Image (cartoon, rainbow, N blue to C red; front, side):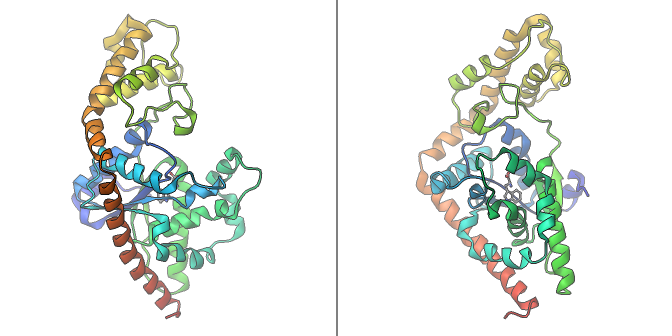
Amino acid sequence: MQTSTVQIQQDPARYRVLTGDRPTGPLHLGHYFGTLQNRVCLQQLGVELFLVIADYQVLTDRDTADRPAERAEDLVLDYLAAGVDPERATIFTHSAVPALNQLLLPFLSLVSVAELQRNPTVKDEIAHSQQNSVSGLMFTYPVHQAADILFCKANLVPVGQDQLPHLETTRTIARRFNDRYATTVFPTPEALLSDAPLLLGTDGGKMSKSRGNAIALGADTDQTAQMIRGAKTDTERRISYDPEQRPEVSSLLLLGALCEGLQPQDVAEEIGDGGSATLKRRVTEAVNEYLRPIRARRAELAADRAHLRAVLRAGNERANAVADVTLAEVREVMGMR
Ligand code: TRP
């Protein structure tokens, strides 16, 4: 089921949004246009925002997390730079909210091993994992994600297509919990799918921090120019928007268009026979112009790590208060008080 922007605009107070990211490195333009911008937009509409920094989830496909505390602060930095208002949003880490994690136990009792094994996104993650054995955490992380969402009774979850199976697990768990304990403790949250088309990395593959093909929000203008100059294109001089036949050129057009507030077809039209060099110059200019205020804010915030830590501390406190109340309710309906 889908919730529309119009519904949200009409009654923003009805919605509580939870979404989040794994702290595995700096956020890039794919994150920005795919979800960050939308989060800020929801917040500006008056929707309450919870952002989980999924530090435990990092452990699903690797043995240890690399400098988790620092990475968490870096995510806070990117969130704030993108325009998330920490006065109104609750930004927290998994690991700092014990009651959230305790929800995992009753939730695990509500799903079968077969259901966990069927999850297509988990299967995909396992296929791409660098490890030769699959951890128990990997199989259970959709249930963990249900705890992330349900601890604060979020009813709207902005996610990408790949996260839909997890949201389905969350919905199943919410319904089964309510049924089994004859209660209405949990809402059945809905997905909010981004309508932003997918941006490719500069090599034409999936944009990803680990593949070195992504322009980080915090990259400087020279690094941005260099990345775009090296981007894969094709040899046809006439620039056209054709995502099927010309994915690389089209992705650059899309990026430029998103930054300039235009349609990619119109940018293509204006470039005409200018070829890849003109396209790249234009996109570089557009990206650097668009990111200028975000990067300026980011640089200012980056100079004050104590502030980032304070934002996280306040978010963790608030998330704990909310999680404690939910866990108490859960224990009450389970007769475990
Ligand atoms: N699994 C998400 C990702 O890999 C991150 C995440 C963790 C999340 N908990 C969440 C997203 C809850 C939405 C809701 O990007």
